[in-house]
Image (cartoon, rainbow, N blue to C red; front, top):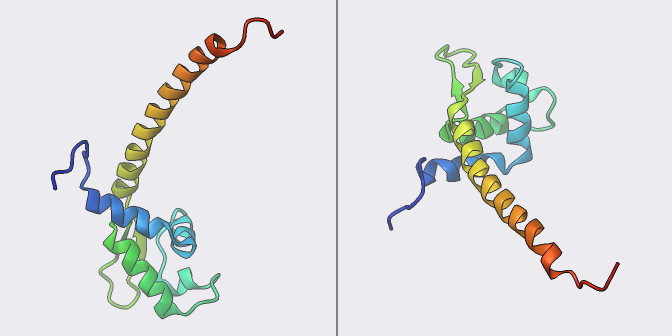
Length: 118
């Protein structure tokens, strides 16, 4: 099926939104806004195992939201901006659409109000 109106691959958007749907992954991304970190550093505030954190990081990495370092011992993770920018741009298109629709409704409502009610 041809995808109409997509400037970004819909599969990429699907992966980003799927990754963001999990609160642990969102918390990991929030932690990475402060800078790169190892799995052990990321796992500290969570009550889950390091392998579980690694699985979450793999989902974030597959969505393109996180890159892992080449150092085989620590493999620090860090944020990648472009997939998030693409998702925000996609959402902004809808925001602009609905703001326009709400503006139209604001203009229509006075016309629909009964004239004899103060």
